[in-house]
Length: 115
Ligand code: AMP
Image (cartoon, rainbow, N blue to C red; front, side, top):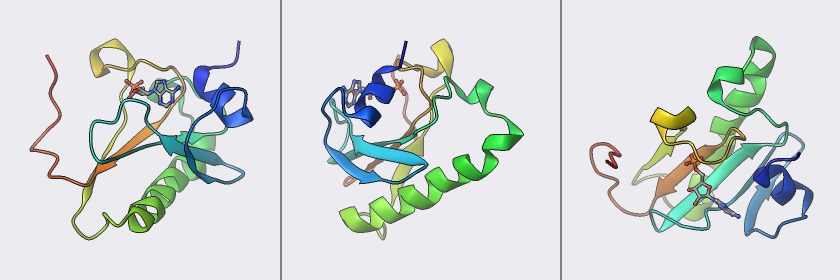
């Protein structure tokens, strides 16, 4: 079964896509936690950080360069932003397709803690 995010990447489910290349796709989070909240998702389906292999190192690094490019485009690079990756239950992961949250547009606080 393709993940929810694979369905967004393939166009089966609509999303507000802000960036796309042959390695990753970025779209606005449906429940934004900040004025800018974008998810950067590898096109390849990797369920969690635990499933990242040495083969994926270039791809994972690419998520950072894309994050910086989107932050610049969104006008939040200079003020700063938070990048966040959740893993499994204790990390609060809800969608099991690796993704990086890019959040900014306001002061994000010292740390994200939701009890
Ligand atoms: P995580 O808890 O790290 O797995 O984050 C999953 C994120 O996906 C949450 O912030 C959700 O709001 C977001 N999300 C879930 N469904 C969609 C969707 N259809 N389009 C955009 N974002 C979504």
